[in-house]
Image (cartoon, rainbow, N blue to C red; front, top):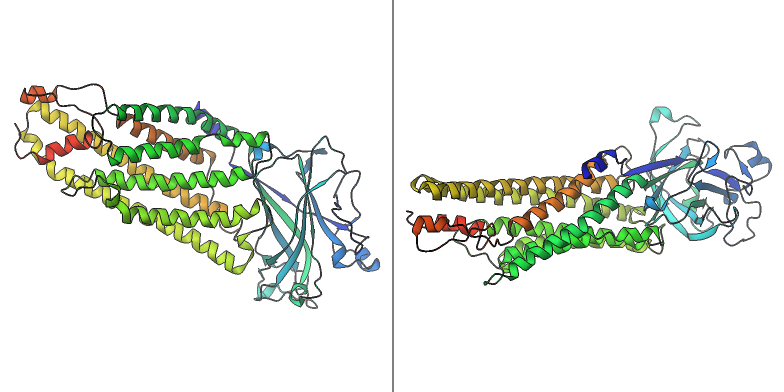
Length: 519
């Protein structure tokens, strides 16, 4: 079922590219609160085809009277489409159209400040066509960064401008959205009036595909009860032991709890209510899982190092865990600074200022470098584990055939699990870097970078995390069965054979390593 769903799902996101209508506000400057300028339909606004239309000059239309308006989604085949709650989130950026004009040139290299008077309206299909309600409004500033080749500086030639962040919604609860933007002429800040010659703008709207959302919801709905049931079964087995729990068992249990929290299909409530906070909660849950998974791998590799150092306590890993926690907290604070504020003001963006953009880019670059550094360090730890095992396997030929067969199989399974851990870590690091770059490329304005992931990769990594934790919980759960391996070798006692760290697979391996004599 899962494989069929993965390969039949559409791309994770879709894009709507639209050119807004140039509506004219003839009532300006007389204020009319919350007036919506509608680009089409029975209540459409008065408009001009372009800002160089002769009527602009003859009717003496001022810049403050121009309202760039767009109704989302766009119609198709003369039929007005609807947005869907399955879209989950919506991000819109702006591409400014600036043409070269020798009489009013764009100030190259100065990145002039541009003021946007923004209004976002909504309505549902059953509402009256003119019954638009305001969802959010704000006056924001953006830095306009444009460039042009020297040999193309002819009047009418377009500048190449970076994308500008506009707004981001954490839920798509309504059927229709209406965007109204003014570029007001400022009487107090002369810099805002020196933008060159603006000929228009283009809206680029990105939203999650409904088909992919259904697959994603299905996966979470299936994995949540499975993970929770396996986790409960694992911990009941642990509590039946006569000894105290060890560090690896507690860490594995904590990883299962965090995974269960991330698997909980909270997103279903977005189909019933307007819940933009779910996007932020999902980011927090995913960040907590990253922190727990990275911490677990360090402890997992360290507890299987099998050297003379005692590590069965959390304080032995405080340096490694501190680096992971600080890195994840930094990403959490960065996320809260943007999406936390967007719960009340969707037009807010940390990418809107030069300082914010540089800071955000630095976070993404450092996060990518840290992820690669972590993987290299984890690979080094696993290499040490393999080296320690290899130096001890020389004693296998000296054992009896029964004991040699037992330990050979144990070592093979252990190495396979370690290699699986390394593969899972590699795919996790790749997924993290791709997701950060893919999400950020629409915000930092560099549309020349195209780095995307498919539905199969996204859902595949998510499924891999669950199957990996399933395997660990199943393999490291204490077994009720005992194998009479020791009885056939020593005839004094039965040795319990399990696949847990202390005592289990690692203890069985450790017993092989520490014995001074065998048979």
